[in-house]
Amino acid sequence: MLEPSAAASRAPVGAAAELDAEDSKLVVLARGARARIGAVEGAAVRDQDGRTYAAASVALPSLTVTALQLAVASAVAAGATRLEAAVVVTEASTLDGAGHAAVRDLSTDAPVHVAAPDGSVLGTVTQ
Image (tube, rainbow, N blue to C red; front, side, top):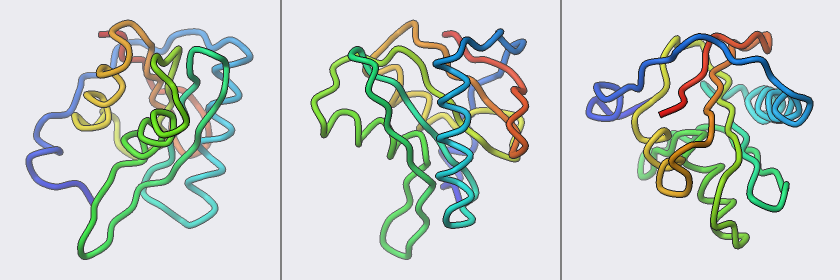
């Protein structure tokens, strides 16, 4: 569950971009991360070297992290300095502000694709 302040700062999702094979792989990874534990969201990112990182949202009494924040944190912990693309699989039709900000910390131009649980791309955030 998102904190109220994070939910209030959701990024608008534009028209869905056409996904290439590498971005489609991110959708599969994000869906898998979400499904594995029945999480609210799953996310995956690809770094400057083509390495991928997938994560699910975490909601504990002492820690709440969005799937996208956790995927970005995993990439940074592995040495990533830039992201090429990101995907969030969610039932929401917008991108959470905290996850969006985490991606933008590493890349101002990486597309963030938002997909439904069935894998269909709902839209893309490019800014």
